Length: 211
Image 1: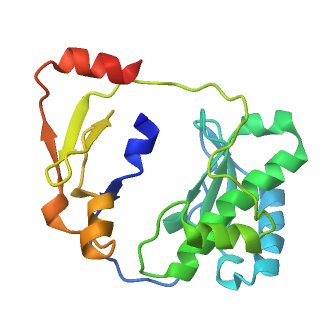
Image 2: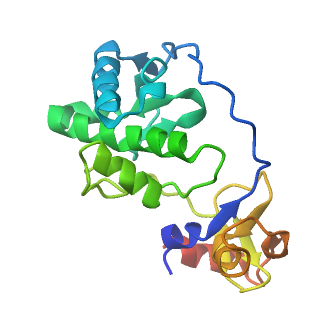
C-alpha cells in the first residue's frame, strides 16, 4: 500500500463543536498571501448558482505563495480558498476549475453541518456536480514540484495491524478509519486509536518507506 493510500485510513477525533453563525474573518493580505477581489466576485456567482447563499457574503479567495505541490486549499472555518500562484501559467480555465474544486469543500461542509465528512467523499462529489465540475478528480495532475520528506514516526492500529508512517507526530487522538467504519459506523472509537511504535530496525524501515 502506498504511503498516500495509507493516510486515507486515518480518522481523527475532535469533540464536535457547536456551529456558530458564519462571519467574515480578517483578510490575509500580508506576506505570501494576496487577497483577490475579482476571484471573490467570481466565487460568489458560482456559489449563488449552487444555492449556497450562506457562503456568499463571507467567502474569501487569496493567492498563497506558500502552497507548493497543492493547486489550492480550502479552509472551512475561515471560509477561505487559497490558490497556488503557479496556476496563473496554466490559464483562466485551470484557475476556474481549481476555484470550483475548493469551493466544493466549503459547500460540502456547510451542508454537512456538525456531521463529520471525508475530504473527498460523496458530499464533496455532490458539491462538485452542483458547482459544474462533476468529473473533478481529488488530486490535480499539474506539473508542480513535489517535496517529499521521509516519515519520522510510525503509528499502528492495534486492532487490524495497519501501519501509518507520518512525517510529523500526531497532535490529537487519531483512530483507524477502516476499523471505525467496520465496527462503529464510521464514528470515532477509542478502541482503534493509533499507537506510536518503534520498529526493530527504524532506519531501514523509514528508508524503505521513503523510496
